[in-house]
Length: 76
Image (cartoon, rainbow, N blue to C red; front, side, top):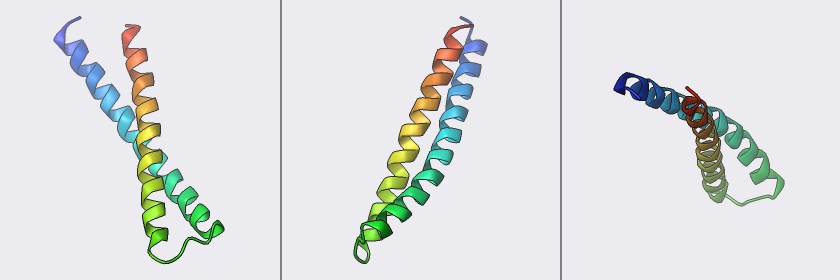
C-alpha cells in the first residue's frame, strides 16, 4: 500500500470515529437523562450518571464505526 492510501484510510477511520462518537453521545445523553429520572437518581448523581452514559455510549458507537471503516479500507 502507498502512503497516500494509508493516509486516506486513517482520515476515513478518524472521521467515522468522530461521527459515531457524536451520534452515540447524543443518544447516550437522551438515554442517560431518561434513565436517571426513571430510577429517581438523587441530586448531582443525575449529572454524573448522564455524563457516564454519554461518554460510554459515544465511545462504543465511535469504536464500532471506526472498526467498520477499517474493514472497508482493507478491501481496497
